[in-house]
Image (cartoon, rainbow, N blue to C red):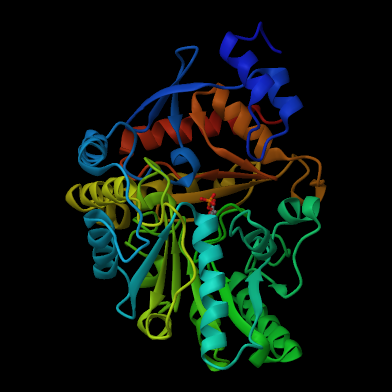
Length: 447
Ligand SMILES: Cc1ncc(COP(=O)(O)O)c(C=O)c1O
């Protein structure tokens, strides 16, 4: 340990398994215990204030400490803390939230089944898709396409879709039938000088995979409109429209995994609206409650819903599908996004400002590429010798994130990437503070 562990750190070390963590390395430093939050700021157990440039885990869209959500949750809990949506029953918040989502989503996607996380939203989508094709008389359509560098969750099937070997290799995944096609990550392919051409090549390669496998064996393609955890990869111009058209041409269902991109981060309620993706299904979580309570959702097109609704018993769902308290939290959260005008704010004000500040790093000697849109962005870091001198073990992003934390801000290190996605409520001054700290961290990177 860096210093004598506190009683809480000792308990944590003895009893608590953390997600996605090297436990020995963590406990050598002492677990960071976060105790409170307000706006974009967190306070840790040592009383240190940190600006949260990652909105928790890309999710606290409305910022911390919003009494509107805690009040709604408390009121719902006092009235009816829980009742399932099984047994031909449900509760008012679940109904109202499904209707609210329908009013915000693309017009063809109007039906929602709830769950508890992004992984479950995608897992539910996978099962719905499988059931749909069986009911449609095409049970051979079982294969699933996703992209390299994608992140779709951690269940067996969603890990199989996730295109990150660091997530799948430890578990000998993917399962059979999960196919990965290239992502439009031009920088990783050394094609950064022409991302649009590289995006076109990705589409051609995806078409070749469809041809090779046989289109009528492929059930669906899962797509994050902006790939997040894989390194913040926004789509190059024309790429998503071409991918959508390719799927449609072959009758392959198109699933927008909007777990990060929905609810304002890219300047719209849904990236699917912004970029006219016309998806068949949408996966949601994170910003749906701004992380105040765990809630996921799978939205499906009217056509899919029609098949599911009129073929008898629908054998899927969780104890907490449509949990009234989490749905009440979501409704209050959506009210805040709407009443505070967070979406136009991201689209026309804070988003452009954030991107301008991010792009100011383009000339920095430690930065090889800057990417982003709305309130999500990434810096690809390079050593002094430039991109050619990078090695897989450098992990410059992880190092830079640790330095940024010493400078008072939380950002995410992914391989050699620094990823930033603050609450949508961040002010210009706080944005300056965030990037000033990132700048100081980059200046110290090679010390
Ligand atoms: C795009 C995307 N899909 C799915 C997930 C999985 O969500 P969860 O961690 O809530 O299971 C994530 C989580 O980061 C995500 O970013």
